[in-house]
Image 1: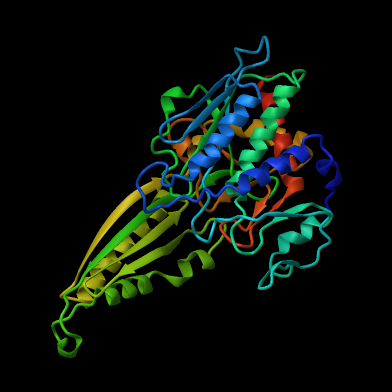
Image 2: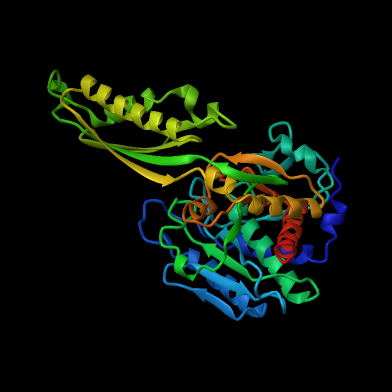
Length: 418
């Protein structure tokens, strides 16, 4: 069994959990249907809180722009101004897959390994969620079973803020320049679209947006989104023979063509997938949004070609109908860029080891703002936060692992100052 007592007794842990609970209770769901950044006004509510907290910590260089991007800087310790600046990144929005407000988090002290009742109709059972068995003796933060928790990524926000507070109030810990990047709309895939790159000074960055400790994620999917528009031909269904093309049926058939063996629920590790995420419409017009994911350029090219072939086959089945596809790149696998900058990962692994854990390299079955930032020229691996069951009403977080993440933040600052 893991030993959580030292992590739970850290001087900063009480502040860490209070900060996380405060952030979690602020609803910040984004909306992928809105093109504006931020896509929802509620994200400003948390952004304003973060700006005020950063100023209260004594940071003088704190800015927030018209698109809700926060950039703040902790100056280097005296004599270390010439050391490389590093960035720490997390996002403010939460996913829209399940209800995200009002979030009612609660703490389970000294978890005993038994099922946890979240609501009369919902529970966290270690028989289903086996990671719970690794957390006997830990303090857990859970939902009330009605909304997500928001550990993705408010755990990352709380960990970075707690680490920066520790550094700001412990001048004996020497560090170089540190930049903080807090972003909107990561969950919509637009989190870096308007990011003010010209203001960035860091040559390396770390996104705290992962899950289980002590995972490092240095490769991710290459991701594309496909929007399929189905145009039908409508006539009274009682006189439809040879005259009707039902767009709703076309959309349903299109989804049925996606290989079930290559769906999210049928794949893991380095296997990619096709995932229909939304369908809407009528007999005349219908649409489907599909996410394509793969770890290789060849794999994603195969999936794009397959979707185009499905569309052509569908038009053959519905000769009076028409299919139009819009294929859009979302982000690329960051593996190659990070392999060219090995020091970024070496420092991270050492920071985790000094925190008392064994780092484990894992692929991200998704992407982060760090994936995009890597593509934009700043190598940015993803770091664990201690959150589990993201995007669901069964989301929970390990306070012990959150504390470990704060140790990692502090150690990264130390190591980059050497």
